[in-house]
Image 1 (cartoon, rainbow, N blue to C red):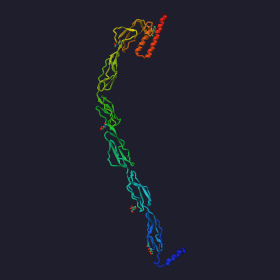
Image 2 (cartoon, rainbow, N blue to C red):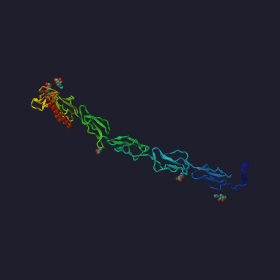
Image 3 (spheres, helix red, strand yellow):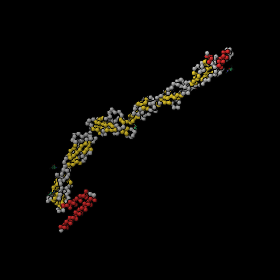
Image 4 (cartoon, protein in one colour):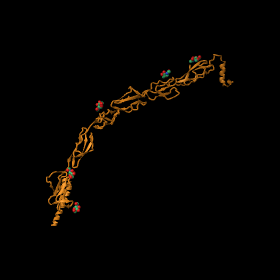
Length: 445
Ligand SMILES: *[C@@H]1O[C@H](CO)[C@@H](O)[C@H](O)[C@H]1NC(C)=O
Ligand SMILES: *[C@@H]1O[C@H](CO)[C@@H](O)[C@H](O)[C@H]1NC(C)=O
Ligand SMILES: *[C@@H]1O[C@H](CO)[C@@H](O)[C@H](O)[C@H]1NC(C)=O
Ligand SMILES: *[C@@H]1O[C@H](CO)[C@@H](O)[C@H](O)[C@H]1NC(C)=O
Ligand SMILES: *[C@@H]1O[C@H](CO)[C@@H](O)[C@H](O)[C@H]1NC(C)=O
């Protein structure tokens, strides 16, 4: 019997309850203790009455919300409980993601992050919170596309349609003004970090195409752009002479604009006249004398060049320096110390080649050949084709030949402009020499 298991007090109550006539004694259900909620109405829970469970804000009923007080004094279904409530999935926000979660209890705060290529709008809080009424706090517009600076390209322009703003993924294409060349990539794109990739190019100055010339051409045919330092070389049609600089360069005249280093050369027929050099020759031996050719001149034996030994054919068809002439070579009057001219006696300054003179020594002197005295009394010398004489004699005093030579040497030393110190030394030697001679003479006596 289950009743026998009950404590005696309760058993008594049950007996009293059963003995009461129906309706005369009201059965009451106990006021239950409910965390985070309460029943409505809150009292007079007689059997047969119903009550509704109301949870505190943020809590939700676990099980049924309406309960009935049974004649047995118990609640049916059993008094429910209130548990913390949850929000449903958080709202989706354009271009933003959430860290992934499954449970969203009241009070939970989530943080949004902008997707690749988007940035948080300044001043906006990227969060949402699960509220007591199980809804999420409102989320404003959070993310905007990343913006790149408006591309600026001096001396050039954007050939793609210009926009008021450039956001992630936008492309731009550029073109340089006339006289400029694009350095870098022609096309670029706004990247997710707000920079242009590849970087915006720049326009560098270039020269205009090099001038064309008639009867010749330049090395840059087919080249479209001529940056700083570009060299263009000109060539002429066969048989024509190139007058001017063979090459020109793209250079800067004033630091701003680029120009060619000079005018283009010309191609012309330039012939210099055949040079005529009487009594002379020229090398190389050619028959035509075009612009720029250089000739070397030399004279026949007995003739000397008067003028430059080299001449070049100029653009105007003349020779520069002028073609030289060959003049006969002459010998100067022979000079012999302590000697004199015997014939001819016309005292010429210049003598022609093959001309001969005879020389003698002054009285008291005789020819000397390196110490050997000669008994001859005349000496013949011939003017040579190189302007020199055949060897000239030396005259020495008979017996005292050395003195005359010595004096002559000192005289010529003066003429040569020897340093004074050296001349002084020579004079000292001469003085000594003369004193020795004097002593010798005195001893003989
Ligand atoms: C509860 O019931 C008693 C007796 O019937 C009554 O006097 C009292 O006013 C009731 N209380 C409420 C809150 O209804
Ligand atoms: C929930 O609560 C918030 C703040 O009290 C309120 O602004 C919002 O309108 C409520 N939402 C609903 C669906 O009742
Ligand atoms: C550079 O070239 C431009 C265009 O030809 C011209 O207008 C300008 O005066 C030039 N600048 C100088 C400093 O010569
Ligand atoms: C000088 O004499 C030589 C020999 O007789 C001769 O061959 C030469 O042509 C002469 N020179 C001149 C310039 O007369
Ligand atoms: C001087 O004369 C002698 C005899 O004639 C001769 O042997 C010698 O070579 C001559 N010296 C010179 C320098 O000519």
